Each structure stands twice: as C-alpha cells, then as structure tokens.
Image (cartoon, rainbow, N blue to C red; front, side, top):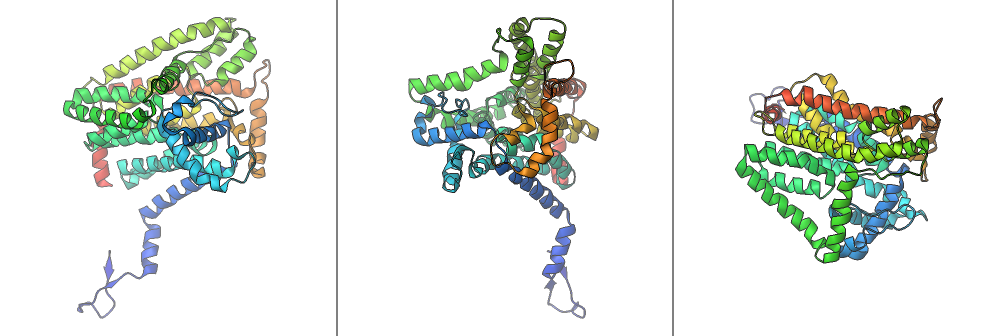
Length: 482
C-alpha cells in the first residue's frame, strides 16, 4: 500500500497510511473499479431479467429436478419419459440434472405461485448457475488478456445480447459448457494438462456438442504434446467415469442413457424428420422453427421459390448434412497437423463445423463460440471490427424460432413495462410479409442464421487457415503485462 508522510515528520520514524477517503477515491478512478462496475452491471442486468421471463424449458427443467431428487442414480430409467404439457424428456448428460436438483432444493421454500414450475423463485434458481458461468467466462477473458485489453474483450462477451438472452431469459445452460471448454483451453495455455482433461470432461458431461470442439483439440495435443495428451486423456476419462458410471450401472439405465443422451442427440444433429403431409408454407414455417442451421434454412427458401417439393428437399438434407459435417470435421482435424496451429484454432474449427453444417442448431448452441473467436481476434492483433462476427449472434434472439422476444409473453408474471417495449417488435415479427403466408421472423431468421454460418466459414478460411503464429504464447505475454 502506498504510504504518505505528514508535514514535519519526514525525519521521524512514524509512517502514516493513506486515509480511507483518499484510498477510496483512488480506487474509484482506478482500472479495477471499472472492471468491478462492468461485471456488476452485467450481473444485475441478468438478475433483473431472470424472474420476469420464462419459456417451457423452465417448466421442463423443474420436472427434471424432481425426477433426479426422486430417483437418484436410477434417474435415466425415467429421464426419457415426458410428463405434463411443458416437460419433455431429459436428453443431456447427468451434470445439469445434479445442478437442477441443488437449485430446486434451495428454491422450493420460496415458491409462491400455484403453477410453481414457473414460479419467479424457480426461474432465478434455475438461471443463477448459468449467470455465474457467464460471469466466470468474462473473468477468464479478462485474465487471459490482462486488465486493459481484457476488459474490452470481456465486455463483448458480457453484453452480447444473445448470451444474456440464453442465460437469463431463455434459461438454457450452454454457458456452463462454454466455461468448462474455455477453462480447458486456459489450462493448456498454462501447461496444466491434468486440469485441462478434467474441464474437458465436465464440458462433455454438460452438453454433447462440446465434442465437436474437443475432438480437434485432442488431435492437436497428440501432435504437439504426446505426454500432455496422455495426461489429458487420463483425467478426461476419469472425470467422465466418475460423473457418468454411477447412473448407468444397470443394463436398462445404460441402454436408456445411450439412446436418449448420445445416439438420439447426434442423430438430431444430422437428420431432419419428414413432414410429408404438410403444405409447403406450413412445412417451411415448421422446418425453420425447428432451428435448422442457416445454410439449410436458406436452401429451403430458395428451393420452395424454385418449385422444388419440400418433402424431397427434406430427404436430401440429411445426406447432405452428414457429408458436409464429415468433410468439415476432417478438414478441422487436418488443420491441427499444420505447423503453427494452436489449440484455440482447433477448438474454433471444430465448433464452426458443427454450427455451420449440422442440421439442428438451436440458438443456444451458438453461445459456445464467441469466446474462442474473441481470443483469436484479439490475441492475433486482428482488426477490431471482426468482433462483429460473434455480435451477429445478438440479432438472432429478436427473431429466434419459434418465438424470439415473445418468450417474454408466455408465462406470468411479466412486467408491464417490458411488454410495452417489446410488443411492437413482437407484432412485426408475427405479421405475414406481403405475398407470402409466412410471418416476418420466418424470413428474417434464416437470413441471419445463414449470414452467421457463412461468416464463420469465411472467417476460418481467410484467417485461421493462413496463420502460423502460436497465440497462446502471445496470450501468456499479455497476461504477464496485465
């Protein structure tokens, strides 16, 4: 702490510390106060939205929490069963179910609504772990780059409306997988391979599509650090085993978990269910509202205008998507063998393959990628305007299928001021465009998702594939300077 001397005491032995008021004033104008203010505002914004917004996922997660508390290690015997209007089967690894059970145990004492699966106390309790994950991702980005540049990078994450929307409005938990994957990469940058394996295991035990980033990352480790790859693999397997094996000890629980968590989920990533009995207008609306990736949404619009039968187009999509994602993943894996490629590029390439070419890409999946784009942009000294690529995500919640900002209107209570602000936007998005039976959001949404998918691919080709420098070395230097 800085010390000051009172007048006439320079030659004395007594030393006086700065008065508290002066210390507070110095802290207020310091960089640390700006950091604290940014994170506090980002946190308060999320907490403000948490109790006043909900979607049916909130009700489903309430159902899953009760199932976990009731059945414990036999959870997957019942996780595949839907119950109630808003309770669909649990299709995730067990970590999120554990978190839900803890959240429910803490919130159940504060329920006040008869329809308590959408009670404000449950809304906050379910979203709070996700909001904390948002904050920790921002802190990691800050730590990665140091206080000066790190705050700028953290702001681009903390105030990305897509991230806020998914975490504190929608209540989906992709930020947890993002946090674990980023922690794994950060551990690799510090040569802590055992921790990296643990965090990668946690990422995959949270959401399955983390695998698309982990596969190229593992191949990068095999090429660049064989010993580190062995240590990474050991702790990764141990983490997966500790968290998953207790839930699949019987044949039936193993079978259920395999079918609904792994096989069923990855089939949805690569295929589209046909709806031959629908007219093309209603089919296309349904097709787009099921969160199909941008390139296929755009192709659906073009093919329908050209007079191609949508049922024929749907049958071709699954085969096309499998081909494209396999080619893209193979390219991502080949990328890891090139000299100068770093693990962030490997993760970014794998996630790009998934988001650009998988059939099913729900809006929440896209939360996984902004930190890795931001690391690539700022660690390599690229033009700052390239940060617009992850910011494109911020436009998707406005028209996100199936309801977009209308998520606010679904379950009471809803703040009247929020309704007044959002109602004109919601009205426009539900109004059919001239010359079509499709509402505005069914036209705008594929344009935005197509733009996002293509921008990722173009970014990867123009920049990532051409680089030779190792950004983790740069990031380490920045962290020391910060």
